[in-house]
Amino acid sequence: MALDDLLDEHEQSERVRSWIRSNALGLLGGIVLGLGLIGGWQWWQKQQLSQSHGANDRYQAAVAATAGDDLAKAKAAVAAVPADSTYATLAGLRLAKAQVEDGQRDAAIATLRGIDATDPATVVVVQSRLARLLIDAGKPADALALLGDKPTSPAAIEARGDALAALGKQADARGAYNQALAQMDVAAPQRRLVELKLTEVGGSPARTEGSTP
Image (cartoon, rainbow, N blue to C red; front, side, top):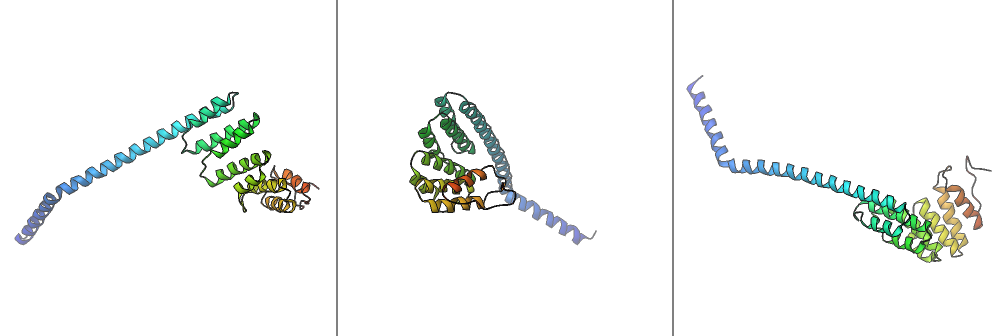
């Protein structure tokens, strides 16, 4: 190997050592920061998993309580479910169902009003059930206000038809029931009931393939 080549290698080695000395603190800080981020991520994952397990345990306790006879105890169990979880919405729906079955309609209305649902599909379920209870309570106008002018799910459209029928708006109710039927599968269990409601407001269900003559 030529002397010039050896000098070049030595110079390059010195430059590397000099760069490492100058940037040692930065390199060390980057390593420490990287390890800290990894540790923080692992801690956050463990916290999330722990919270999820805790919410699930409380939800299961609420389910068991709503299946019992003590609705006051059930209400307390539902309130213990973390409010920022999907479990809280599901527990609230179960409590409202138990209250309706126990003849506590107004309590069920209050329970459904207190549910803070964020998932669009769940919001539809809550609003549809609440609308039907409001209609049963003699408040069809409140049900219409809750559902809005253009609900999109068959259940919500059907509930809107119920509210319109309760207000004596037969033609509008027919339109709502027809719209709901148009979005329902032919084999949907609810379809026959909506067809009966349509008949009651002066409508005639359209024949569909597979329907009963």
